[in-house]
Image (cartoon, rainbow, N blue to C red; front, side, top):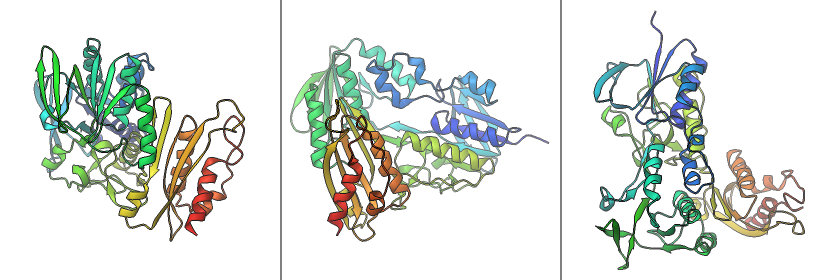
Length: 447
């Protein structure tokens, strides 16, 4: 009797989580991973910190080596192998590797092809324009970075802000171009303004409400013309304007697509073909507050969805709970966190949203190192259910944003938040925990 054969397309977070879970559930099966690049199971999120010198060793960004997966988990990994097509009727994939084409048969397939950087059309093919999605991208980028002093970053999201800090850490001139009137998606104007002040204080130029219209190369430099009529010279452009799912192969195979061109999956990570699962940045997810299909390509969701896809491909029946969009980012000396819906998002989703903003301290005010901590919390007036929060401060943000994320997952009300037994010690929190204060003030506004 032939062994059951599982093929995983894509070897990063979701793909390797899926492959590892399949191996654990089906130790007697064949598990094969096709990866177009030269690395598996690596931290793309760590690349800005390596660029800035915080993470010294390049290899430390790789969580597990290929050999570890091969020898310890008996997972076959094919590097430099690009899957180009899926034939659902014959249950075969077509791939190319080192210039030759081949086919492989599967009993169950997991698609974890991730996403690619969005690059504006007028920047495609332009010299000295870079994106950062893979470790291969990182190697080329760092090699080029050594010889430049002036760097322009397109996009003021998490990656753009982390890259700006990395550039300043390396003594480079950094500017950010942002198409909208605020930095960081989902933050209200007041908090976004405080974040912008932090960036400006660290000598990063920010050009808001504008876009690149034209780029001309001259003598190894770039002349950039903007939509607002301004122009400047730079030596390198880094595009950090978001990603799009690598779903064309799935579309060509006739699989159903969802929001933003993702592969549509259900809560079991099943596609429209019962033998094919999808996970990670190529697949849609579901917002755990609204229940609606969303595209939020975040690392923790990729790992979890990959694990569930592998579990269910191997015969399990686990459910993915969805995501609240919990994020945290370091912006120079600031910590910035968000989870759930902001006020405007909640209104647009039909909630009678009420928000309150408080400023407390990260520790007891008399304890050395205590600093301001600002929390904006949002709830629904009718149900009093917590819908989201935004937090900025110099410490303690991640701890607290996770508390609100837990409240969202558990469908807690603001009144429930008042009953939580929060930890207290002067080095870590004031007697009145800031989350408790925020919930108390919001409770009063809901009356």
